[in-house]
Length: 84
Image 1 (spheres, one colour):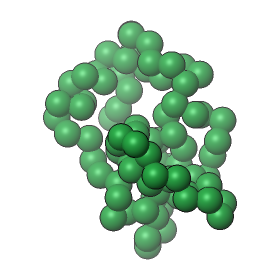
Image 2 (cartoon, rainbow, N blue to C red; image 1 turned 120 degrees about the vertical axis):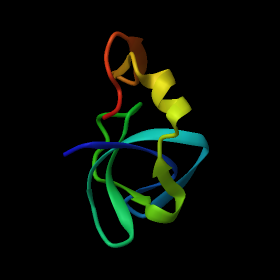
Image 3 (spheres, one colour; image 1 turned 60 degrees about the vertical axis):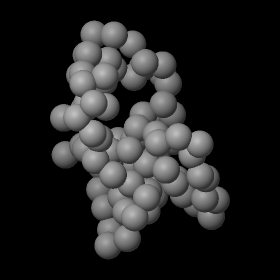
């Protein structure tokens, strides 16, 4: 089952990227230390690791802002539900 979280660090293979601002990610699995998934804005890149200590649940305000948006090819579009 997919979960939507907000991450500040993304690990692609051996490269760690610090996001300037919290970034919406789609989580599809997890290990003891990481969530595994993809960035909502970059759906083609999969199996990204998000350290649990720098990843969090969406706030109620973030959920409300995203409530009627979906992400299509990296762009936010009105008309859907972008979190569960």
